[in-house]
Amino acid sequence: MADTDGLIDARDFGTSAAPAGGFHVKGAHAQDWGLQNRLSRIFRPDTGRTVMLAFDHGYFVGPMAGLERLDLNIAPLVPDADAIMMTRGALRTSIPSTTGAGIVLRASGGPSILRELSDEHIALDIEDAVRLNADALAIQVFVGGEHESRSVANLAKLVDAGQRHGVPVLGVTAVGKDMVRDARYFRLATRITAEMGAHIVKTYYVSEGFETVTASCPVPIIVAGGKKLPELDALTMAYRSIQEGAAGVDMGRNIFQSEHPAAMLAAVRAVVHDGLKPEEALELFKERSAAGTAAS
Image 1 (tube, rainbow, N blue to C red):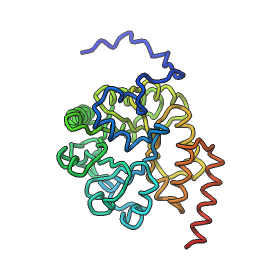
Image 2: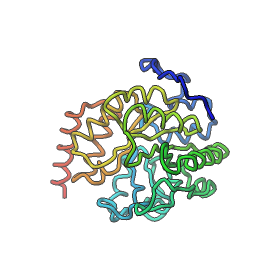
Image 3: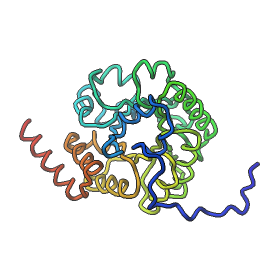
Image 4: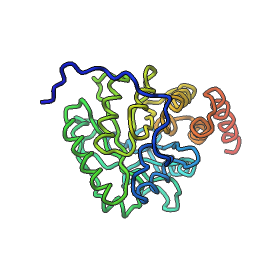
């Protein structure tokens, strides 16, 4: 057993120092050409950031509000997203093959919302991912969860397969109902996920110490949108995330459950790529909403 007595809490995170390398995606400067090329389809080379549209929720909760018809509710939004995160079933049935968005496939699954969610397995073969021209594979990592060890092992296996085929892996730090959501926990969860080989980490924003989470993770962090928030609150979270070191956001409910999803997606893009402040982005949202309503 590792000796954990006398561990000294980390102090100097070097939050003002630029990451090493030169490639526009943090930590990927030494990766193969194919893997870098796939990352470049997720993270815009001119900004190094991404706006990912997540709609993989149905793999464990079924047809939630806003996802009743993926072909009607989601497909029209895809051209305005840098990347999309979904299951292979959703991709094959509902997303046009002409899309230019980066493709991030959910690769883990098993339990529904009726069971213990950490009881997941790898649910996607690497050959099918390559067949679908996936740009990354997403897998949950339950640090502190009941099935923590298995989820970490699942991540390691997927990274091995991804490295063989040049496909990046996005590790999602899943948080259970009883877990503390603070910077110390997310530093632990994101660092473990990155050290096990994930090329991207998706996690939650916290208002205190988030810059230490992004600084201490050697790969890019993108922020999960989480539950539906008022538009200004969601835009504020996106803005603060970017200002504190995140390389993008992966929003689902805050876009597809908005009264005006296309307008909200445009506002989020303006925050992430153009540096608009939340109040400015909210005005853009209102303008796009009004224009969309008038057009309909």
